[in-house]
Length: 137
Image 1 (spheres, helix red, strand yellow):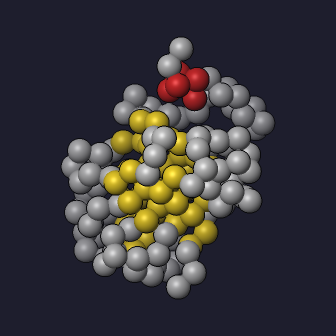
Image 2 (spheres, rainbow, N blue to C red):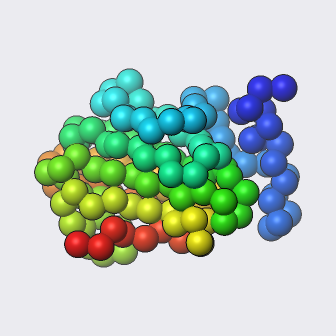
């Protein structure tokens, strides 16, 4: 059974029998830099602590989803924008600051979907599950 299949068969305490990891999902076991156009629409999943996904400079029309599939409280997941870009979440954005699913608050299946809606200012959080924090300015 592939690792991706195992993720699909995960049973969550909420009673869900499976997760939304789709056919474009990729499991990452090391830090990864998202590639404009090639990675748009993909879902990236990780089960390891400290994985950092680095976003490319914003290009209009890009979307990407990140999922923390580690057991509860076992792994932090960081999403880092390009130095001149930000991630808008909870009403504000700061350039070059990460969005973090902290180890202390992480639950298996926490996820965030980002989209480059405006093309030049910041990545927008368009869907989130779990607790996500912004890196301090």
